[in-house]
Amino acid sequence: MAKAKETVLEIDLNALTHNFEYLKSKLQKNTKFLAVVKAFAYGSDAEQIAFHLQSLNVDYFAVAYTSEGVALRDAGITKPILVLHPQPVNFKTIIDRCLEPSLYSTRVLKEFEVCAEKENQTNYPIHIKINTGLNRLGFCENDIDYITSRLKSGKAIKVTSVFSHLAASEDHNEKTFTLKQISSFKNISRKLLEALNYKPMLHISNTSGILNYPKAHFDMVRSGIGLCGFGNLANDNKNLKPIATLKSIISQIHIIKKGETVGYNRAYKSGVLKKTATIPIGHADGIGRHYGNGKGFVFIKGEKATIIGNVCMDMIMVDVTHIDCYEGDEVIIFNKQFTAENFAEAANTISYEIIASISRRIKREIIK
Ligand SMILES: *Cc1c(COP(=O)(O)O)cnc(C)c1O
Image (cartoon, rainbow, N blue to C red):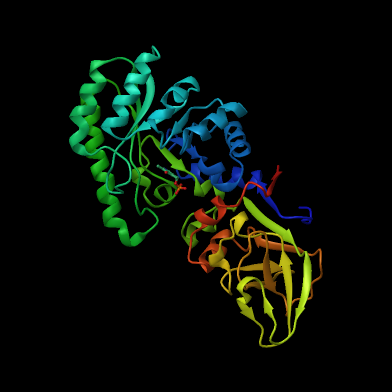
């Protein structure tokens, strides 16, 4: 891999292949695999990731918002795309672009059916989202009669899948709750299926569900973070490979005399002679201010350099007093060894947040 000459986010498609094959090895042969590529495939590059996974014959894609599905269609993705969180204002676009909505309430079900009828659709594929305890989106058990009566009264839409989402599949302390979610999903979906004269797919497992609840794979699983190389638990992380490397360079070195300060609001005051390195990445790039003032760190020449003072919009300053480094040297914010998860933990957050927030202005480099 080339040494960085500016801030870049490298995406390793070989690591993606590895993660996809590893996660698939946990499934029964007939279980389908849905790749969640919302939020630019967790901050990487949705089109490149989706194309690569399509070439590996993934079964399905999911995005959160309609616009993300449109972008994939514009790029030429042909596999089915589930839109997890659509709004009625976009229902016509959904149909125009052959996207498949998750319908999660009586309001959106009704509005989508009206739209599909107006667009002269028959059996348009939709996905019914059931709330089993996350209390975020989804129908409850009492809505089943409404759903089935709606589905029986017209021909415009057809249920491709019934699904739910786990609240704490990565947390072994919440096993009882997760098992309760799974059994309530079984109950509610069975009632729904009994009322239909065909059999939609069932799915509930995200990455941690795949790894921790093999009995909850049903007909399909949905993975996002696992494809990015994180399994949420140390034991699973070691079988996966982070696909993203965020690296940069030292723009300038400063010698800070005792009593001098560094950065905005003079937040860092030096008690001794210090050497600092200024790096072109800041809170506008996704390194939030919570990483500042001694929390976050980067690696230079394999050594840890802590962020000192406040994170600026386009820069951070790190303490390199102990490192033999020069202007132009490479800086690793995270890679396969110094992972985004470790970086995130330093600021009390999670891998999902840091990787998904790396700004669009940082160049993506795809490694094949
Ligand atoms: C984001 C999301 C996923 C993917 O979860 P991971 O933990 O990243 O695998 C799956 N299902 C739904 C409904 C989601 O919103």
